[in-house]
Amino acid sequence: MIPKLDILLNATRKLIRKDASANLIKMVAKLHPADTAELLKHLNPSERIYLFDLLTDKEEIAKIFGELDVMTRTEMLEHMNDRSISDLLMEMPHEDVADIIGEMSEEVAQKILGSMGSAYSQEIEKLLKYEKDTAGGIMTKDFFALSEDITVQKAIDQLRAAEHVETIFYIYVVDRQQKLVGVVSLRKLIISSLNSTLKQIMTTDVIYVKAFEDQEDVARIVEKYNILAVPVVDRFNKLVGIITVDDVIDVIREEATEDIYMMAGTSSEELFERSVWKITSLRLPWLMISLVGETCSGLIMKFYHGTIQSVIAVTFFIPMIMALGGNVGNQSQTIVVRGLGIGKIIEEDMWKILFKQLQIGLAMGVIAGGSVAAISLLIQTNYMLCFVVGFSLLISITLSGSMGVLTPFLLKKLNIDPAVAAGPFISNFNDVTGIFIYLGLVTFLLYYIK
Image 1 (cartoon, rainbow, N blue to C red):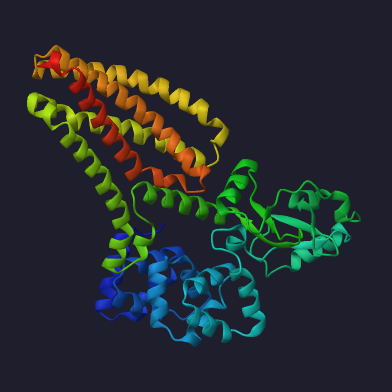
Image 2 (cartoon, rainbow, N blue to C red):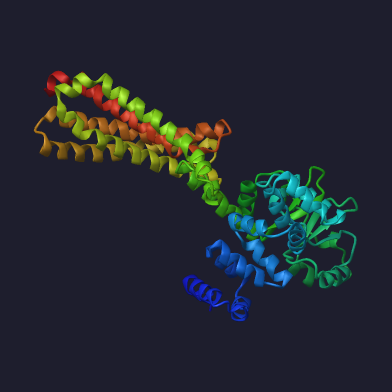
């Protein structure tokens, strides 16, 4: 059983204070690399360096390092010299090394690559040519591929000897030009005649992805076809790597996290950024968008200042109309943004979803508007004002729900991530339209409300 993180942290800090390095080494040796990485993440910099310096097994250090988050990993690299960094990276899978090298400055990256040896650095540079969020950027080059002409017996012999390949879910079959032509499951290999060739038993209808495809598309393919790994080919259909299901899980988590941050008007970069000014610059654009939107709301209220002065009770219901309309808009856009993100919704579904959200908006508008009208009647015995409040809320909710659908689709059409629609844009629209509709109706019916 793995001890709880807080217990581990307390025990580790106590041993560090006592300088009980031998006991600390024994304790860490019992942990999984992922648990050690989690422990390092929550220690302060001096404690982290103390513990890391005690580790001696290069293979174990490499596994721990691969589990670290970007910020902790960067801090550890700053503590190490170039020789130590290159020795450590050469113990790690190529795809992890490419990710780490890609996070370095150009000067440092070239220096590290130069100390690794030409053969190794060339393999890393091949991976670095792919963008980080593409199939090529997340694939591993440790795959098992065999020629279509070899027999099942030879394939089994080579499979037994393939100690360098960490994970084998399928045997990929290639022709003489290394082009992907088929796939054989391990079960099919075992039950087939030993004298048969792979060409005779392979499945030719192979599910694969191109190296420059977006990682989100890869995740959808793995989810749709329930496969444990998907091969990656270049533009000539040559097999260049595979993407395993554990990498896909990381992609799904990463993309979901990114969407959540964008919907809040910030960025995942904030997690790994130590500079207050840098974090401020990430948030400030969204704050300024909100500032512009709320300024528009204020100008609308200034435009209708005569109406507000005539019936001061009008102001009681402005926050209610803004808040309720905004909630409905955010609900609609969340459903659409997430649906587009995971591929459950496509652009052709827009009108169908819009019609459905209009119906939902009308239903909620009638219920919410009627409820607010009844509540307002208890506050103000002005029947016409109560009607205006309820009717304004009905229109505001209906429009907000519609915009929550239309805006993500529009941004998708413009090749902009729909998640950016979630926060400031939808909220500002709801505030401006809600106030405009409400005060416009009050002004139009002012004679009957007074």
